[in-house]
Length: 399
Ligand code: ATP
Ligand code: MG
Image 1 (cartoon, protein in one colour):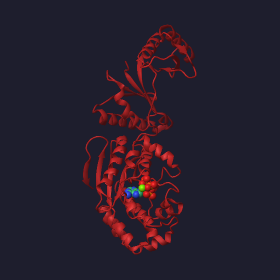
Image 2 (tube, helix red, strand yellow):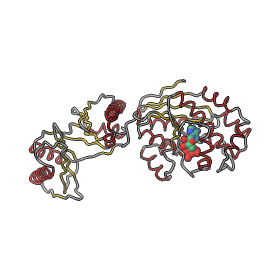
Image 3 (cartoon, protein in one colour):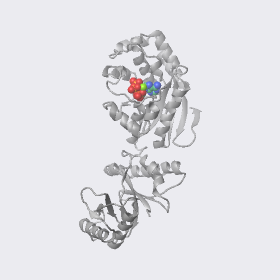
Image 4 (tube, helix red, strand yellow):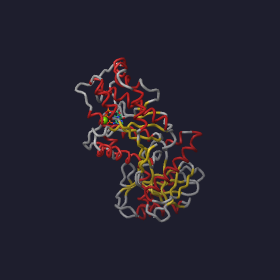
């Protein structure tokens, strides 16, 4: 029976003196993700470059989902712990083979020996274990290149671990080790992916959504909250700041040339997101912008939009192809939500011919006709914040 899950955390090993902080955060995150998924407090130990989750008689499967969501986890394996003794390793390897769902025809043994004090070197240990399996498991052949099953034996300091499965984690860095950023979350395909990629680098995110009720429906808002709920599964919870945007859009469409609408709206979004970021101690904004994808995402328009704020803007998708973005969206389960048909606030005020190369001076001139500061303050003051939990009920409130 499996008694532990062995968890690998690649990139952390590179982080020198920060390693301890990173490891502590990773263990804390794993515990929280497991607790919110299963309601249980898991038993976790760390040992020289590995994390061990003690199964205590439980089956390992129920931990797979939370571990796949823990940024910083490179991969993990359900393992059998055994003594530092050749014979014990052979028997345990045989047990592992006998417990496989499908009987393999070919196999190989791969030994790692971080414990250099163990007297049998890896190639010899591989031979010993392989020979034992050939003798005791009928109809089996060695295939070093593409075996049906690879039996791994990791000879560590106080024990050895035997396993045949390696499941990929998300990689990246533990959430909470990279500060905080404010994600501009629309209902589209791109911004949830941008948020996920940012979280993957250890950055905690909160989200801002600009909402144009009654031009957009309650369902459009639900869609955004559903996207946040998917992201919250990786984080435990995410705060979503819902900004009333209708008055701003009406003012823009009333007073300004329609070719500039999109750029002007985006400039307001950035200003407001920056204010909310400051309130919430977030040091960067994140968007799903992608060069050339739509009129508002040319270099000229990114320049004109970016000029209204000082906060750095992270754009994780900036050079990606649509196909790459869609693949990530499918993997993280945001795709099906994003393609729901509800309109977002920008499609409602869509100009006939948006400028692909808006001029900064033209934007500044147009804004002379608007009460920019008053509109921004009003929107920030009337922002509603919703805390989305990965699992439990959402919590509503105002800040
Ligand atoms: P997405 O797929 O994320 O909606 P998009 O390709 O539709 O992006 P745009 O509509 O130009 O591109 O939006 C660019 C970025 O601006 C979005 O990725 C998002 O970060 C932000 N944004 C757009 N609309 C909103 C909104 N209503 N609320 C919050 N952020 C928004
Ligand atoms: Mg969009």
